[in-house]
Amino acid sequence: MNAQVISSKPKEINLSITETDIGILYIIQHELLKASNIGFVGVIVKHPLTNECWMRVSSSSKPLVEVKKATESAIKMADEFKQLFNSKIKVS
Image: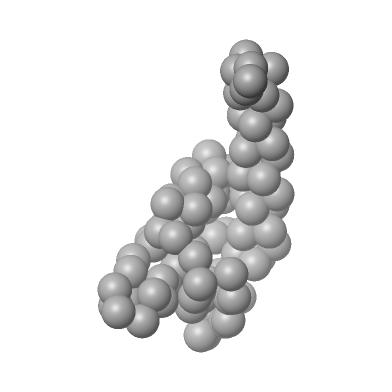
């Protein structure tokens, strides 16, 4: 996954993300929307042939910091799910 800042303002950031799946960005979007200081989070596939997604985040605080927090939370949640899955499923 590669991310690049397209534009940045004190309360808004636009990111271009390549080499990823939109599903991962939906999880991060979900985590962002849990925070009370987030005004808007949008995720789109820019073009299916280029495999580029865009994310826009508006926040009353620093949006890039909020994206980092949401990403860490999503990683933690995925790790907990992996541990739960591995504990319940036995592979022969």
